[in-house]
Length: 249
Length: 133
Image 1 (cartoon, each protein chain N blue to C red):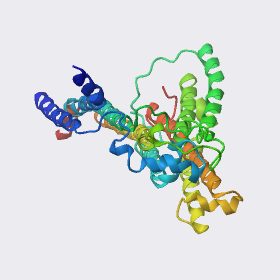
Image 2: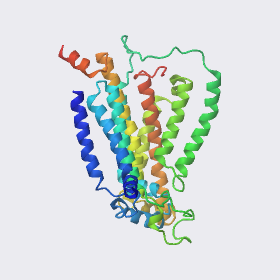
Image 3: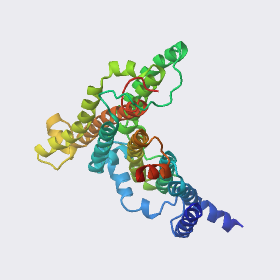
Image 4: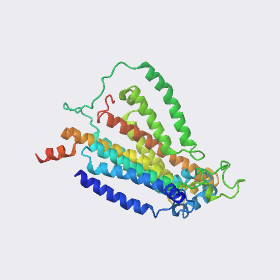
């Protein structure tokens, strides 16, 4: 089996290497990838959306339909893990993950984490809110927020975090994030434009159309961030406790 | 000699991605342990990320954030030169792909945990033997 796998892998490798000779040189400004649609994004984005960060404007405006369903994929993944693992009743022959003996709480670790977590969360909010002008955005900020909760549940234990951040509200917020995204799009529909054409918000908010694009992007990034945050934490919580949400790692 | 060096420099980003991709592919086919298969899948995925991001770079270009663009549209900035900014499109595609990759990795780990609960092993051949009995 293994020699066969090696042979197959090597033959795929030879094919790919042969194909790589025809690909454009590395960092060639005239390569096909950089010469069709991307010059339009680079030249027009600032005029059309008043957002200097092109990654944000392409992510949340030009390709917002794509991003909406990426968010739905994350939502579905979170729900799937819940469906597979979550057990509300306790079975006797429960499989227990190999866990180290939990000694008494480590005061240094807990104090350090208690100082770190608020800073992380404020930074995550900055990454979300300032994602239009500097590197950042909803996905990145959401992952940082989720990581802060995971850090908290590693330093303390899962129960401590779940007491403050209930499972019901995790499920509720994951749906709310997708709803914010789709809702912003649907309101554009009611205002007489296409789905997710943020220009329609200009009349409602009393601003120019370019600013409306910028504000619409901020709105959907907040929706993305909420979904990503709760799903990342819920993945950790379910996987680390094999679905019982008792003490975690 | 210079030609050879130029050739290597202009293509080696693809070679790195291809080598990573092959490591992942080999692991996915030949490893018996389901967890190792999932790790190989993650390596395969990283190879794709690397490939896309290396496509997005341009010589002498900076990150795709318009300089001095903070005053809003139509302000006092000159015509934007496309050659000065990296291609934003691959960055966007990989940004979402990374987060979705983590989420699908979570699903894979959940399925493996469930398999372990049922079969008491995550070795592929032992699971197959279990199922035949």
